[in-house]
Image (cartoon, rainbow, N blue to C red; front, side, top):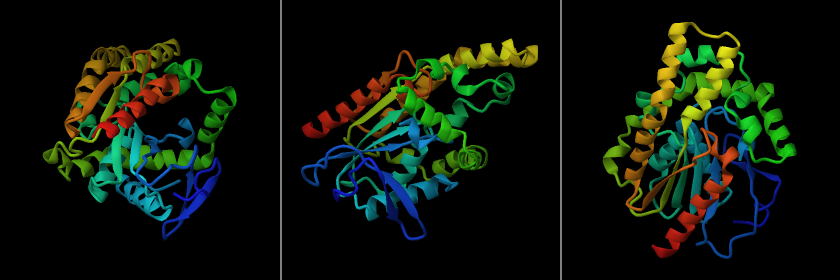
Length: 290
């Protein structure tokens, strides 16, 4: 990787039809065999929690072109949160599982069957949470580990009209469809898809988020009794269903590990970033023993 890429400023990388901004931090690798870490955000998420292509397949294509044209020649430890589970799977489907992938850290990442098991966009939950400040409701505003200026920048980025447009395209137009598209590729029939490459899976307690949203929504008088009862049942079963999805990820490699961020809801990277760091260290350690 060229030294110009490894700076704290964005470098525009031409991928043919347009350019993408690549932010790089840290020292340059000693050689092309040392892995580098690539962070991928989830649906409708600012890149600052660690641009507007609407489909998971397009995002995977742009990612592959970014890696090729930067160029990033080192193996990648891909760290992905939430919808990035779908994006990573599409990236693997597109590029294969060669030397370019060293391992994965999956941070409460969406498995391809996630919507069939746990509906995070349940209309009753959305009705209860209407008008509630999302990050306050789920406790992240109070519990995040960012510095104040980082948190301010994160919130500022998500308040822009550009962000809102991208979020709508990703969340409303492509989120559900992306799972159907991915399942048609039948990657699950190729497990262990990554062979013995290290995969570190981090699960959360989604019930924490939904309990906070429920309490805040009820305080506002939101929802009928029927809707409230439905959401209470969602909360009761959320963690068990989430656990079953995280265990599905273990099938992707013969060298996989599942841990839980015990004090976090879905946004683990904001509330327990140390757990993500442990995941990267796990992958690094197990690359060295391969």
